[in-house]
Image (tube, rainbow, N blue to C red; front, side):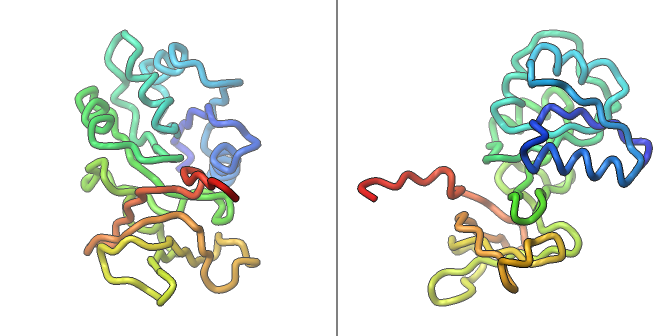
Amino acid sequence: SEHQVWLGTLPLFHVGGLAMAFRWAVMGARLVLEKQFEATRVAALLRRGDLTHASFVPTALTRVLDQPGAPFSPSLEALLIGGGPMGVELLRRARLLRLPVLQTYGLTEACSQVTTERLADADGTTAGPALPGLEVRIENEHGVVPTGTIGEICVRGPTVTASAGEWLRTKDLGHLDSRGRLTVPARRVDLIVSGG
């Protein structure tokens, strides 16, 4: 909403940073842009009381949590974590500090976020269900796989690049639980190709 104040530390040449800039311009919200991520400064900004949202990768969140200081502001509504799994221990640390962290999954070809945890369901193991208007399914070489089975994450919706066809095959590995929440054990950038 127009009342949100987002902290932007992600680079604007990356879809995560660009998505923040476009979303908040459309909504009339405020975006506080930092030239670069600096853990001490970011921790201080999250303590000062006017920010409501921020986006981080897990490593950046870990560095922020390592900074000593006063409690984080209760004005924070959501800290979106993307770019890799957050993990149960990082979620536990953040929750002990009363930070509303939500794991996400997204990619450039889908204009950033595809799934996001809901605060009441956040457990550090899933990236949540698909956002409204988007669909996620898991496939292998034979087609759609049963719930709980690991396969390739496929995404469909209005934010997905048209060049993908009906479904974008992400090459990322994941599985859906019975509630439609996505778990991502491996991104394609995590894979090492050896010997060609």
